Length: 598
Image (tube, rainbow, N blue to C red; front, side, top):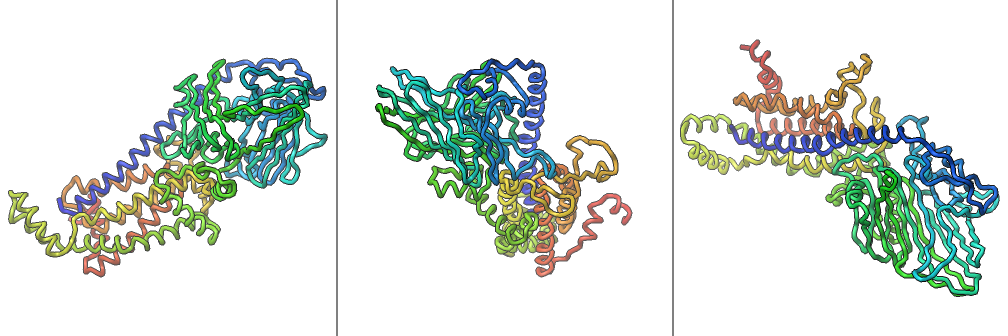
């Protein structure tokens, strides 16, 4: 086996490990997650909805309050309580006057599919729905004291015809009838940040001591991508430390919450593209908690803050505090803007850049800059590939030159085998002398592949986790670079109406990628070893099927990178005086053509 073929096989093994690892960590777990989701849906459908509880009073115009265990369709749950409308350029929804909760929120700029008529993305939903997800704040009495405080069933009062917009905050009030008046003013910016100013006025004759809390609660275990390159679940930063807790891990802990004392910080839930996070004041002394509750057979998860110390309010006095809530899309520019403007501790980590953030973040900024110039993320990927190729040109050039020199040494290497047929150690010694004399490296063939692997992973991460890539079109049939190529060879690209299994999903771009990979390999002569020859022939086929389920943007990158590598390698081979016998190599690699020739 020649040195460059050994190196090629090493590169193939490394690449195959990457692909098989993806299959193991992603494809398998994803199928299991889908199975569990189906089982959960079947169990949910078996449950019967209960009737609404009687009205709680406090507001004669409020609809009946709902019992805690009722499961209703989302529109019915929203209609079951009095609300204040939310209408901004980015958000639509309402504030629930029962409990003063934010539990109805949709993202105006994002839809479930690429179709412009598909439903808007729903982020927050009432507790009475199957996938209830809401934000709530309130107070608890300090130990040893009592006070009538607002609770989740308290009906707050809002001004007539109130509507929350970017220019019109809404103030909710609640008078407990015993001298305490609670108010909270909710404001919203153009994007996804709510600012909530809470105050308590003590009109009674006795002091009162209160602990303020805020929480995000999520009912049911949401469907996640369940892939190692992306965290979905509970997330937060306390005392400068990032906490990422999976739903399954918190559930395994059962009744054991994860609690941390901190000053400031933030905590909440993150999905692939969306998030909701509580943000107390930067100087607030709080305890952060992550909790799981399985009461009634219904999973629920919670991220919360509560004051470390009670606040005492003297008669005639009042106290005011400001906190924030982020609820929306994880747009990089918006997230970073909040991080910088509010001096939030590591809020930029809301986006999962991974351990190699020093590579993924610059690559994202490059792609975003190129997209701003060209108007198309697909074109940006093509241009970025050229720029990356140019940046690594000296390394790749040296590698291809060394490979070309080794091809010129093939006759001498074969001669050494005949001179020392039974002494492999002597063969290796003479080969090392030959390599040193001609100034070539037997490891040179690995360098282009080793350079490509980190770029591949970084681009995969960027395409997979950033919302900017979601539903980003290229040309033709590629309307979403973050999704696999939707065409399929095994349906004759739509002519046959059937749904083949996932391993037969083979689109046009994966085929182009496989062809370019095969042609690149054919620049090298077919190895004399039959095993190596078979690897040369079948590895592009294996990669074609493996990469067919990867995001289309990644497959386009790989195909384009292969094409550039073919041009680069052929140019260097020609400059080194090495024969480029592409057609001959193709013929020799195909048994039926080789047999016809002989």
